[in-house]
Image (cartoon, rainbow, N blue to C red; front, side, top):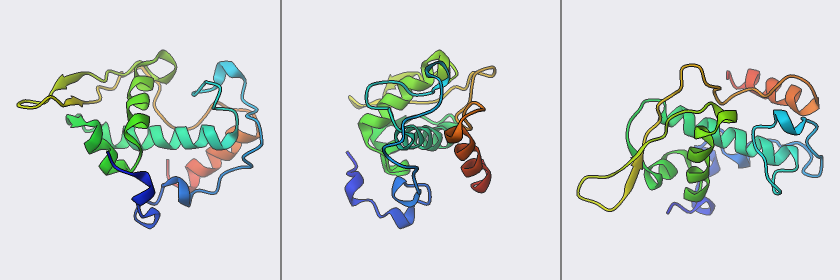
Length: 147
């Protein structure tokens, strides 16, 4: 398992350490029905932005359709393996596009490997729904970073 604490943020431009987050105490102003990420621990703009960027990094890597283990993904996008597993599950959900993320055993191994099969009509990682200060801020960040 790649240890995120040992990753040099200077080598990864969109690493969370290089992103100026909104106030950590500011509660999301996006209606619950429009949020991409839910749960007791997703309460601030910082939480939502971190997960959005994480999912976008995973998408950008996996869009090539190649089979990869969670460890290989972690080494390439510099996110924890448990977070990658959660994001792979998220991509299967309706609110995240109902994309295919099949798994199979790697030949000659007990490791599972995954790939992304985009749903042509499904939602893609990227800008958030219109409305609210956080959504406006995300759209501004997306524009700055060419997303």
